[in-house]
Amino acid sequence: MRHTLLIHKHLFAAMLVILFGTGSASYATADEEHSHHMQDGDLLLFPAILGTHLSKAVSGQAQDKLQPELDIFYSIDHERLRFLAEFLLRDDEQEMERLQLGWLLHPTASVWFGRFHSPLGFWNSQHHHGAYMQTTISRPSILAFEDESGVLPIHILGALAEGFVKADVGSYNYAFGIGRGPMLEETLKPVNILNPHSDGKLTLSGRLSYRTQDDASEFGAYVGHSRIPLRGISGLDEASQLAVGAFYFLETERIRFLAELFHVENSLEGPGTSSRTAFLAAYLQPEYKISEAWTVFGRIEATRNNRNDPYLNLYPEFIASRTIVGSRFDVARNQALKFEASRNERQDSVQFNQISLQWSMVYP
Amino acid sequence: MKRLLPIVFIGLTWAGVLYAHAAELRLVLVTSAQSSIPQLTPDQARKLYLGMPMVVDGKLIHPLRNNSDATVQEMFMQKIMFMSTQAYERQILGRVFRTGGNRPPVYTEMPELLKALESDRNAVTYLPRDTATSTVGVRIILEP
Image (cartoon, rainbow over all chains, first blue to last red; front, top):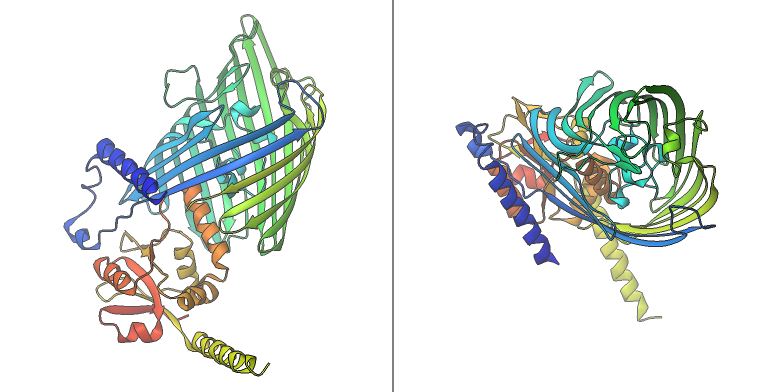
């Protein structure tokens, strides 16, 4: 295993050399040669096995499912040059989730190019695909991944600027992304970095927030605009989407709390037709750490004005409301066992209960 | 029972020695004597080891972890980071996973750590105070 990891590290390192050569040499000065600081980077493996059971058979979802996955993550900074890659491997999906090449403009500001998570929403910037890293098993449905009944652009292929500005008692954080987004063909199809000529169109989003000096709380707002091509839908060509929202996050020694609110306006356009509607989506997620290894959590998700929304009606499997209770046990070193029980109602009014059990870990 | 008594006595004595060692041990943050890194505050040191970028004279400071001794590791978590090792590992892992970059490199051998400190004027690490004052070429920048 150790040899395999070393081989992977060297492969990534070789990729870097081939791709970027001595791109960072111009930054290093003679004076800095003595203080040269180079690391091998971080190669992380996130294996997980998820088992789910639905209380009844519903269209588009397996009633019982066992899904193993492996998320492979690599990150390295060399002087000002930055590189980050995340690849997800499942039986039904093999996808380069993030592939970013960046430049450190300033120690607190970076610009990235490639495929990245949209700054739309707090959760989407905090959590990615490594199951071990988030307390819960599931993501809030309003921020579900595009190909998992998501309704917002989660991935962008383009440019991202992010950083923070220190203030007296905290910091102002910002992130702005612009590039190509998803398209809708039965479900949202995320932009594919290996096929940049896919049909996704312009999407842009930004987030501004304030984080207190002790990192105990953060609040902020975000906005995003996307043009989403619609394929195979009679009489419609494109959805023009404007999403605005706000979040609040609190973390103490034992308590974590996260709340997000989204207002989403969609204009569906086709030859000689145009309609404009809007819906609201929100969730609250409290967590309580009973001990170092045991956390209990809950989440309430709700959507308003969704029943007659023509855009949401294109996603019958979208979870419009959900109540979750669950628990996470950190077992052994870097391993977690999570349990979730939920009551769900989809956009097509189908209701069902769900039980999920997940084992996840990070290596090394 | 009589056979157990000496074992219990030795065990308690050893625990007492370890406790006394931990109680006497004082950690300090150090850098190379050639470095221009100024004195840091405990809050700056904590943020540095949590992965927050810190700049001196336009250069990023590189924190190095000293895992050469279990007591030093424990003291570092208690006195500087104010969290458990597990919580710390998860925090720095989360930061790298979210925003990229590297976790602070870990050194398990003191000679390697001192060599890394000497070769990088922008590096800092933590040592027992006695070790820091008796080692040539290092400068104390924080005594928590």
